[in-house]
Length: 188
Image (tube, rainbow, N blue to C red; front, side):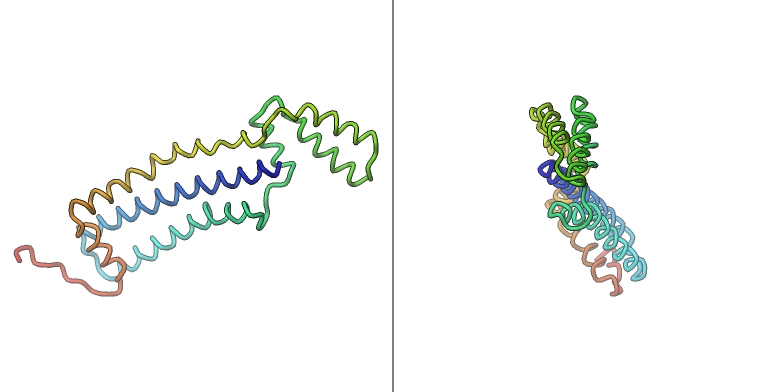
């Protein structure tokens, strides 16, 4: 169960990291395109800068750092019964057997080791041995979320290769959001 719980949080962290990269790149691209064409005022750039910063921090904390902390068992993590329910949803052949074993174990710990409970736990455990619980979490399934992260990253890369100023100039204006910039004359 401990291996399953660690893999469960690793999976959440990987998925969160992919979403973070996707949102970071997409909003970076959108903000730069907006600023490239609008030459917005200092106030608008300040709002955009802090919104972008807050959004990225929120996503990073919620979808990457919290699962990472839980991976290292910091904070509230899945207990054995919650993990057993998730595993039972994934493996119908296990269903309630694992949950029953956990409840029997808890009962035997509360009441002292009773031989009848111990025998019941051992019997149920024999039926669960061939099931690898860590297979309930498939890390490879996170690859399907890459379709959200790769396109914005590729567009940014293409823009950087084609015309670096398309990305760097609006970024400089957004980062220096308190500074007033004047739009260059079109004929100069």
